[in-house]
Amino acid sequence: MAILVCGGAGYIGSHTVKELVTTYEVVVLDNLTTGFESLVDERATFVKGDLGDPEVVDTIFKTYSIDAVFHFAANSLVGESVENPLKYYRNNVGATLVLLEKMIEYNVNRFIFSSTAATYGIPNSELITEETATNPINPYGRSKLMIEQILADMARVHDFQYVVLRYFNAAGAHHSGEIGESHDPESHLIPIVLQHLLGEREQISVFGTDYETSDGTCVRDYIHVTDLARAHILSYEGMTGGKIANQTYNLGNGAGYSVNEIIETCQQISGKQATINYAPRRAGDPAALVASSDKISKELGWQPTFDLTAIISSAWAWHSK
Ligand code: UDP
Image (cartoon, rainbow, N blue to C red; front, side, top):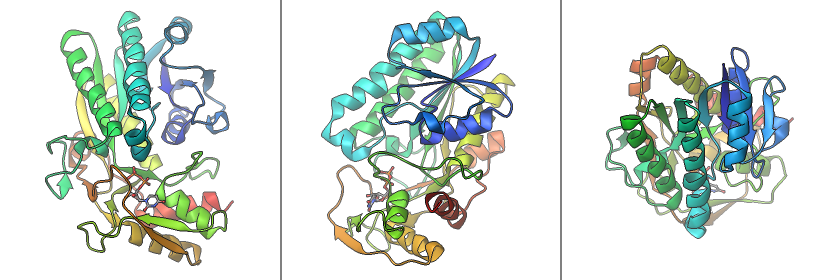
């Protein structure tokens, strides 16, 4: 039995594939619009195609004996989703529906879904638990929440089980040094700061200095990509072992860092000084998002193993290579 990883050529998908291939047969499906084939571990079978194309999904389910689908493939930029909502609903919701329909048709009944802290919107508590009300404030967060709701509806009537993983801010690089965080164009804070410190971009912009946070800049909870990858495998094994089904888990470190603190830590680790441009707020950004991951810790024994310094050190090692 194999695991189908949709979006396995992207940042978080490729890191999860690297962990999976040590134990499981893996098939990666990716349309390479934002992913890179070079990130896919060579022990996995790579199929270039779109999960919203029923013929592509048919071929995969006919060719391979798929036990579970890990679904990472999505557009994931908050600002872009505000500018171009239909792209987000088409790709993140519409395409996923094709995949889910095909899963029911071929009786593939385990699904692990990449969701996001953006489903919470502006949270009504400092530490976000899975009980915190969801109320996304941008189309990206809404597109993810829609799929979460669809999964719950499916599990009620079909032989179908899922785990939703709500990531906070994924960061860092694989310990092998072979893969790391790379988007084109890059919009994420840590790679942008590191690229700037390496002289690869002129300056960095801090989006908003008037938030209600300790220093006025946005606070986020950064989580190492390998810790995220391990949570997927624990979730899958939890489902196959009959321990859990149809659960939603937060994945974060439980500690919030402001944009200024991230820049400061990057400067310390690199030994270099940044040139900072203080800019207006970016559309769609809540002030602070910090996770409680107690639920997955209690139910599956997951614990993050990288703190902020270890996360940024791994990213720096990869970017400076
Ligand atoms: N950010 C910033 N400058 C940048 C990129 C990001 O100030 O060049 C801020 C952004 O507004 C947010 C935080 O850094 O508050 C993390 O943004 P990122 O895009 O990395 O992840 P997101 O929180 O959107 O998933």
